[in-house]
Length: 112
Image (cartoon, rainbow, N blue to C red; front, side):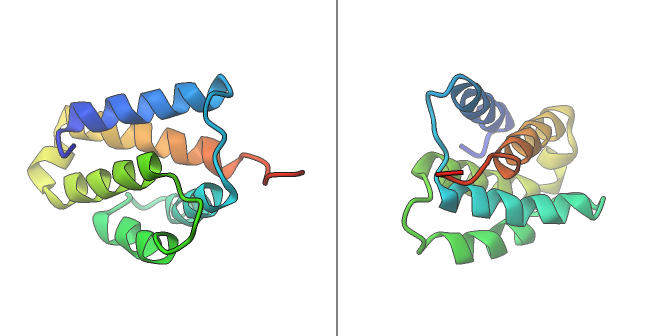
């Protein structure tokens, strides 16, 4: 899934499933998104190392969905490939992943 178009498509699918209520992100999903959202709030571009640092903390956590983990792993790999990440398709893919992170970070924790 290192191809930018596939990353974008997966991010769009997760955004749609979340908006339609077909996917209910777990608290672990939300915590991972909030951690990455904090990087985005700095105004600096997201990079692969930031994603991997969040994944190290998130992966042992039960409840982080495989689809989100896979998407974030692929995004980190894409960001490591500077030429691909800097191209129009790469930027579009990362923008959609950031939109997903925004949506998840703003989701209310379960039971609230």
